Image 1 (cartoon, rainbow, N blue to C red):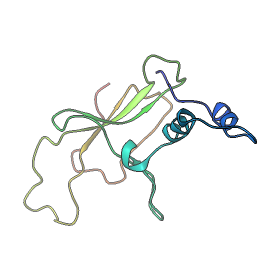
Image 2: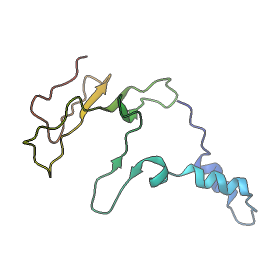
Image 3: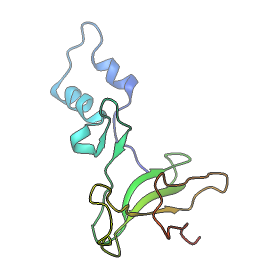
Image 4: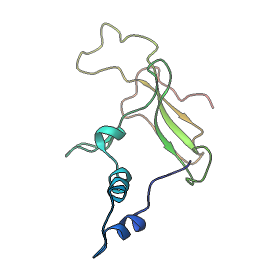
Length: 127
């Protein structure tokens, strides 16, 4: 994965005493940080970190890629949401939405994860 953002040390050097930052320096500073609205990640007071999955509603939507090293060409594993394959049953509670299917791609053997509210019939995806 290629990260083309300016690093902190370089950003700090733009704003030292007697420096005259350019418009490009300010642009680098703004683009180096996460923006909750633009980048699909949010942390509201009293709430956990929230990540918006990215992708087509008809296919898997990737939520998080985890890398051993950012220099790796591909993530070590990916957490993704799968589209719902069926409508929620009529007897489902209107206040508790049906959870989308969740899949892990290439998880490390030592890592364990379980959904906080599994649906009946939920099971691990085939490896």
